[in-house]
Structures are given as structure tokens and as C-alpha cells.
Length: 226
Image (cartoon, rainbow, N blue to C red; front, side, top):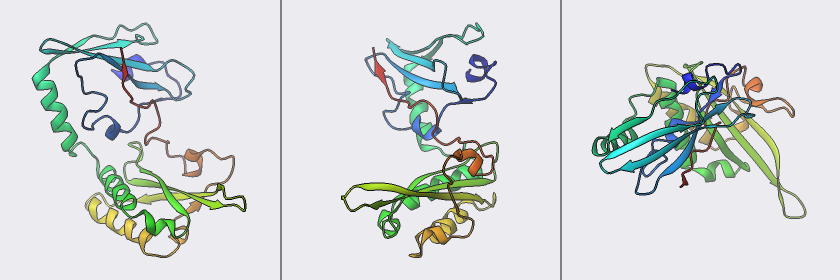
């Protein structure tokens, strides 16, 4: 559906991290009040986002779209049995089988790094994000921030760093454990093999070797009630 709506988008389309959509009471959960969520937008961000309107009509959940496809394509309305719809959302939120191996590694690594913020805080670091790009399915990308407090007591961003790391598709959980251990060992995470520093004025995808900035770029899937 997104591909049809943006078939003339020369520079790609972004639609965010699937985990932002598959959460309890998330943007695809339909209650008594109709709501809208922004689903996708052109990479340039200079055109209106494609929005999904969701509502219940008795025992039916209805999806409609606005605006229609930019090339004048009419996007069909979808109607779902409400009971089956709710059950499928609940199942999808608990089922990670759609993930490719590096996506599993990224999920586990992000959870591990976020579970122990004090270890990174020793070095005035915090995790920015962990993600993977489906166009480069055998790597994970890790991004950190480092702030320092100035003499006036305010915190200032002084450094950004991270890197791309290969993943063994046969053992994604082991890869996550090993990467987490390298960053949480107690030593300076900036010294981990493969880490690079983010030069000023260089876009993050270019800095990471041409990997698309896929993770959760794109529209934020908040509900707007009608």
C-alpha cells in the first residue's frame, strides 16, 4: 500500500520502526473514538504524510487513507472483523518471527544497553539508538551520545559516536550478548573496536558507510482523535 501511494518518490519513503506500531494500545488499536495516524512520508519530508484513518463501525474496523496516492492512485478502504482484528494485533505484538537475524540482534542489544544506563553514565554517555536497515540485513548500527556539564551547570552535547557491526545470522542472540558485553564491560565504550566518531556536518547515513537511517525515522505514530 505504501509503495503504491509513493510510486513516484525518487528519494525513498520512510515509515518508522515496526515496534512503534506493534505495541499494546498502540496506533493501530481502534477504540470507540476514530483516530488518525501518519503512516509514511517521502524521505525529503517536504510533502504531506500518508495518513491512516481508523474507526469502528459496530463489529467492523475500517481503514481509510488521506491523502490518496500522490500519483492519483485510489487507495482502497479496508474493513476487518473487529474481533479478528484485535486478536491479530495482540498476536503480532508478541510474535518476533517477522524479524531478520540482525533485527533480532538490534532488539536484544537495545534492550540490554537500556537496562543498564549507569554503566554508560560513568562515561557521561547514553544510548541514542540501535537499529538495522533491511537493505543491509547482516549488520546492526549503534549510536551513542555524550554530554558534559559546563561551568554554568548546563549540559552540552560534546560527542556522538557509534558504528556498524556484522551479525552472524546463525546466532543473533549471541551476537547481541557479545556486543552488549563489549559496551558494558566498564571500560570506555568509545574504545570498543569498530567505533567511530560523528564528524560535524556529516549526515548520519554517510558517516555509517552509506547505510540508510532506517530505524525510527519517519512520522511519529501518535493517535490524533477526531
